[in-house]
Amino acid sequence: MVRLHEKSESDAVDALKRAALKLFAERGVDGVTVREIAAAAGQKNHGAVGYHFGSKAELIRILVVDGASLIDVRRNEALDALLGAGRQPDLEEIIRILVYPSIDLAPPGEEECYNRFVVLFSMAHRDLFMSALEDRWNTGYQRCIELLRGAMAHLPKRDQTERIVFIEAYLGGVLSARETRLADSSRAHSTWSNSRILEHFVQTIAAIVRAPAMT
Image (tube, rainbow, N blue to C red; front, side, top):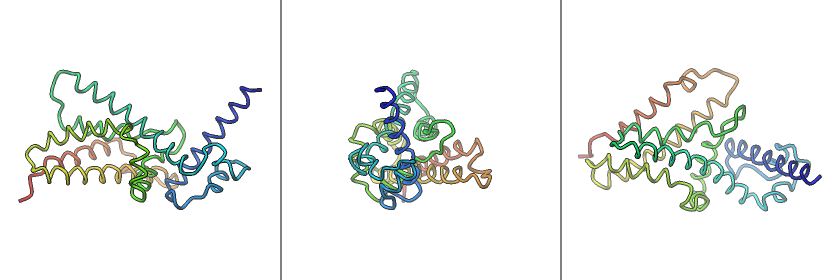
């Protein structure tokens, strides 16, 4: 009985997280109530979020960390392999480690929602988003950024910083747009479902890095 109870609790938690992530991705965290999350998760108890997570804020924090920690592990593993190869990595290799670990985060058969969720959340609540990361779950990202700064040695420090800001916004915006289009099963999206689109994306980020300094 204890095991059945534990499985039931785990299933409820997973259902609430999936439902919340999808709703937050579509409407932002401020546009969704805990009652709506419970209903979307098939929970009859309208207080299910509070029961399982303590609060909506804690549920949001957990969702941020779930995705960010997975991305961070992937990035750090890829960076360790790349930098341990005994040669200087090229720019596109570094950028691929920014891009590819952020896709295919959901289990097979489930809708990808994480990029849309974090883009909306970080735009509306930047301080809360950074607090959830705790300077712990974005170490791979920071390592990539330092490598990109090295690739921008031809630029003044101010231009380097501005381009990092551009790349961060561009990365989140494009991955979020891709998720949105691919989630629409009512129509085919030849551009976003094309296997070459992510590599083209990598090349355009490289172009931002390589562009000459402002005059």
